[in-house]
Image (cartoon, rainbow, N blue to C red; front, side, top):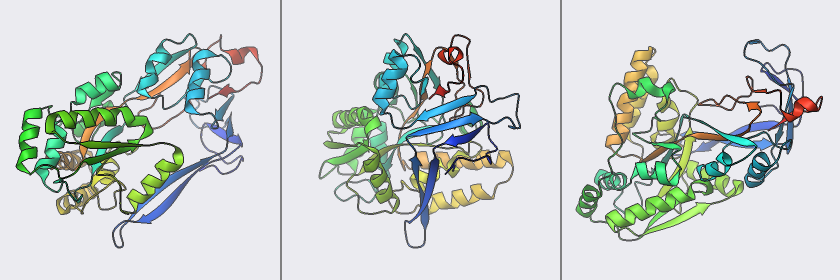
Length: 378
């Protein structure tokens, strides 16, 4: 949290204008259990200046100033980085549907990284009129999804099919290796058999997501309809206020107007992914858990937290992933890549967990080299 300019920063940059605050709100889930909801408050413009006392001089900083323009709508920011020079140099969170536009740009290029994040569905196991309390129904929903088609056709190849809730990245390779967990196969026939065995649905399934993933939601709904004969009502929540309200209501376990919520979630604790990813979707304090507490998950999670060696953590994390997958405690979709639109004269290094600019630099032909003192705009 940086709530005002000042000289106290120990990072690669110091704040000289604006503010960027992340508030953490404790929300009661069940009884005395709590989860934490983070909200962001950023000024329209935020300026950083290189910290000459940064401890890792080999890393950076490599630019004099950075300006964040938080007041630009995403579509406008993308237009400026692709079609102009000197207005915007870097745009974060580029949607996969816009990747082609960036690749065709004269002024920008697409930079991608396999991020420690997942796009998965929180399943309301207590939903009335649907058999989602039965593991066979949840497996049917997973078997009816063609993850490869989602990754290749809907997300333009910028995602990987998800096995469990540990994304396939170099940082998480150890956690995926011991059990060789594989994604649910696309098996519509088996999905239909399981769905019939549990009696099917007595009403349409309500599938909700945030605006960024609306195309994925409609694709999943179509696959469910084809394989299971399931009617699906899709709702896309648009805007920061709608997303914030939906997250707060779900974290507090208030009555919900959806049965499956597609949501992307990332982790910074890459040494032990379940601490953030699996807990969020399944755990007692999970902000996306939609259903009763799972005692076996809690037992495995407690065991994970007691492990101090890397090998012990890896094995315990793998057991959790296998259990969550076998019980279909979420709808496992894809691990989306983090995409950036970057000016051709900017050398930007993406990270799998965070957004960093310490080792970002500009080439000799960059517009700022011709305008002394002008900051790099982001």
